[in-house]
Amino acid sequence: MSSPVPIRLGVNVDHVATVRNARGGRHPDPVKAAEIAIAAGADGITAHLREDRRHIVDDDIARLKAHLKKPLNLEMAATAEMVGIACKLRPHAACIVPERREERTTEGGLDAAGQCEVLRAAVSELAGAGIRVSLFIAAEAAQIEAAIAIRASVIEIHTGAWCDALATGNAAAAAAEFERIRRAAAQAKNAGLEVHAGHGLDYVTAKRIAELGEIVELNIGHFLIGEAIFDGLEAAVRTMRAAIDRGRT
Image 1 (spheres, rainbow, N blue to C red):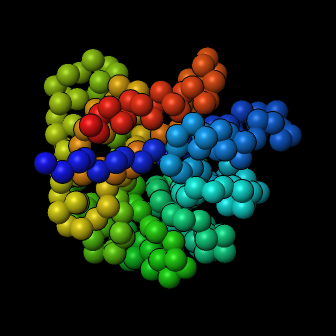
Image 2 (image 1 turned 120 degrees about the vertical axis):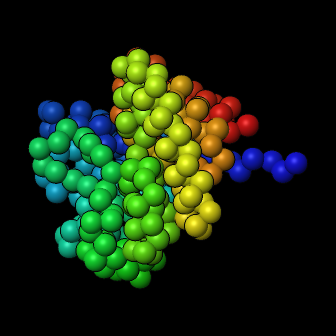
């Protein structure tokens, strides 16, 4: 019997920047947070450069790229500005996400099926710059098929609806959402896509998602930064690392 494929942990440092920006200045520094997370077991760092620069700013991305010894995953909208920034800085990966100014956080998956032409052009340009491209999508067959048509190499499955159903105690909805995620992960893997997942995950839900062998990377941010307030970032990342490793094995 073969050993399970290890699962990678990407730590999102957006909300370190949120705290910094609440007062201005340079403290706390997302780059320092990234270095602590990597030392504690993270396999990479994720940062979302939004159009309105509400948390991460351009200088953060440049410094992360310059200082990190592990992969940087740039979350971004499929706009000319963001594609240009990514192609200039060349992070290891770019994850294209939907973005609305009025949302507090990314509220759902990208409508890849409805934006094929725009996304195909962005993916082509990013891939041409040597950047691995993923699409952040809902666990839906049509969105996976669109990702294939767009020629993305990776999808990241939005796990927020499943986490919300669990949080509200709706067991039936949670079970249905998890089955959707399971089926989507299998469909994408069978089609040759690399499969990631993220949004709303905590220690318990991340461990459960890690049990799905098709998923090779989880990207987690808000929960870890929140736990860091109480336990420290190093401890939070180590606890998450242990949780997803238990789920995988």
